Image (cartoon, rainbow, N blue to C red; front, side):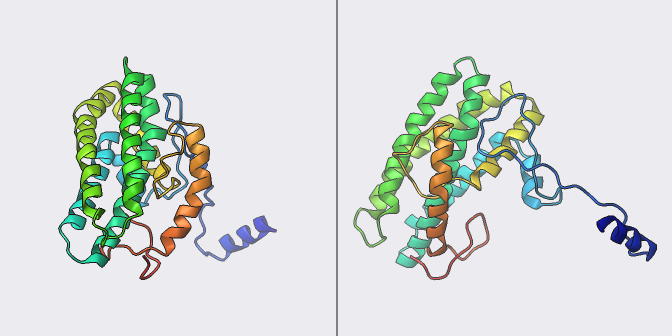
Length: 247
């Protein structure tokens, strides 16, 4: 029946030239390996896909770092509690997704691709664990709490050290071990993985695949449901869709 309709449409000059087959969806939340082929179900004209294909893994991670720092600055430079709350939600959302995507995609690549990769990755995971515990405390505070800003600043003090070491040492070594095409593929998988990660800190969850993958798939839907009722900054940029006034 479908073939008959297709022939009929062509006879009537509807301009139907070719039936395209959608590409195979990407295999999500798996560590990158040299033999893995990265495929994406989105359109080649999707701006998000174009961005990830154009950037290296270092570029997308540094972009996340700058976004996290921006949200931190918005919180500490505002005196309005509603604005602080909105950027608190954005900060938690951005940092949580970033950290888990690194653990699922980047750190396994460091482990297998560098001579002392396991030592580097284990150290990075330990630093992430400290950040997750601090973030868990911060996400449960309100802007009128006396510990709100001190908790955030304590978190950022440790996080800035981690970011500096990652950008100046770990990512440099990783890029040297990767061909440019592999780096872009890794960046694409990193961005895709963030879509499916939890969006709130869960410090007791595993921090290595495959158990982190399983925990993430179980936790993420609950986090995303909560995101609907949270308030978000009224500005363009990477963030979930706002559900209204929220909390």
